[in-house]
Length: 193
Image (cartoon, rainbow, N blue to C red):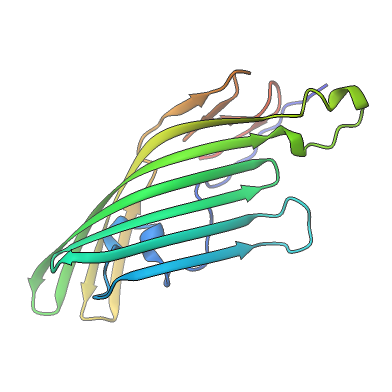
């Protein structure tokens, strides 16, 4: 029998390369450099432990005009039974306030695919394995916004809010993924905020 429990955590992957790839967390930072940038990143936490968090990220951003930035991010994040695949398109508009002061405003549109990998559960009874031999997945659309104030090239103040829409995905087994609540299985629960 399954039992219920509640946990809390972030919904987007927690990454340590925010300085190398700031557009992952703030769309206003798309193309803040003057060159075309492409980044491929990989992170594995707790090496050697089965089901440890693992994240792949590809991003590209550039300036089609002096005051405009465009960016694209694709990532795959897995932690044990849970996974998320995301694609985000970013747009940033830069305003010169006055000498050496810049304000950048950004928006993003995201498509997120959440997955539960039941086939990774180790069954204690042989007849339970047939119940766990599948995965559930669902897709949702979301949006984000942010700004960046920059003085010269050394002082940055960023603010962003991602996953602005409070949407949910319902699966065949009535499991729910959402910005507020995520239920896994029929009775087993976890919460992502």
